[in-house]
Image (tube, rainbow, N blue to C red):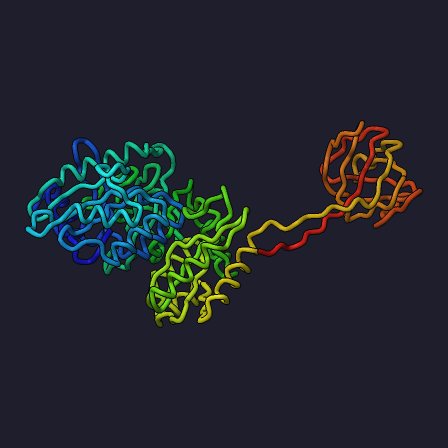
Length: 489
C-alpha cells in the first residue's frame, strides 16, 4: 500500500520477476491479484488489492486475510495524503505495518526525513527506539529487497502466525469474473485448511464444486494449502470481492447454506454474519463509537476533533478513525461499513458514487454545518451504547408447602402466597435457607387445576418455573419485575 507514484508496482514486479521465469511473467499473475514467492524456504503471498476500500472490507469481514501491510514511501517525496490514508486503513484493520522506504538510490533521497514524518502517525522506526520495521530499498537498483523480505518474515515470526492445514478449507474472494469458455471464475486466497479438487463449497450467496484449481503461475493443481492464491472453477455464478469461502461436507449442505443465505438476503439481513468471524474492528474490552468525519477545511476538522476530545464518559468513548477534508468518497462509505462507524459530513457533500453506495449499503451520511449539532448527534449515538439502568421491584413471595407431579406440567410447587402477588409474567428466584438457588421465569400458575394469570396474598396455588424442577418444601419463590431506563450522556 502507499501513494500512487511511490513505486509499489515496481517493488512488486522486481520481487515477482526474481521468482517467475520469463515465460510466465505477466501471465495469470497479473490477473489473479495475488502471487506467492519463496524466500529462504519461506513462502510469502503478496496481495495486489484493488484499492484501499477492498482491502478494508476484506479485513472487516473478520477473516485473517492480510497479516502484514508493506507501506511503500518514496524517499525523495515523503509522506503524502494517500500514504496517510493507507496508514489509517491498516490501523483501522489492526494490521501491523512494515515500511519500505523506496527510491533510496536517487540523489535527493532522504530516508531520515521519511522516518521523522512517520513519527506524526505513530510509526516509530527501530533506530528511533520504536517497534516499526523500516527498510531502505531501491526497486530500480534492486537494493535491500532481501532485507525487506527478511523483515516481513521477522514480523510474521513475532506475530506467531499459524493456521490449521488439516481442517476444511476457508478463504476470501479477491475478485470474480465471467470468463468466456470457462464460465464463472473466482480468485480466492485460502486462509485455513487445504482446498482440494472436488470439494463442495459456499461463497457469499453462491455455491459449487471445485472443478479446477489454478495457481498464480497458471498451473492446474490438485490442492491448495493455506495462504495460497488460486483461481477456482465450478462456482454457480459470479461471487463478490470480499465474500467468504467455506468448504462443506457434501452437495446437500452447500445447497442448503446457499439457499438459507439467499433467503436472509431477501429479508434485508446480512446473510454472512453467522458464517464469518467477529469483525476485526470490534473491541469488546470497552464500548467505542467509531467516527468518520469529513469537513470543508482543516480548521473545522481540528475544531471538531478538539470538541469531541472533551466528551468524557466512563463506559463509552468516541473514537475518530478518520478525520479529513474533502467530499465523502466511496472509500469513506466502505470504511464506515467495515468499522461500523458513524459517517459525518461537515459543510461537504458526498460524491454521486458515494451517495449511491451508501444507499445500497444502508449507511447513513449525517450532514451538518454547526459544530454543536455535530456534538449533540455524537452524544446521542454514544448514549445508545450505554447499558440501560435496570431497576428491580419485588412484587410478591410464596412459600412452598408440597411438591406434586402433574402429567404434562412436570413438577409443580404447591405454594401459598405470603406477600403481594405472583403473576404469570413475573421473573422469579427460588430461595432456600436464605440463598438464591435459581433465577428464571414463571412457567405456569394453577388454581384448582385451572391455569391462571395471577394469584394474590393468602391464596394457594401450583407454580412451575421454566427450566427448574428441583423444588423442596419450605423453599421461597420470590417474584419480581425488572424495568430498564435509558441513560444519556
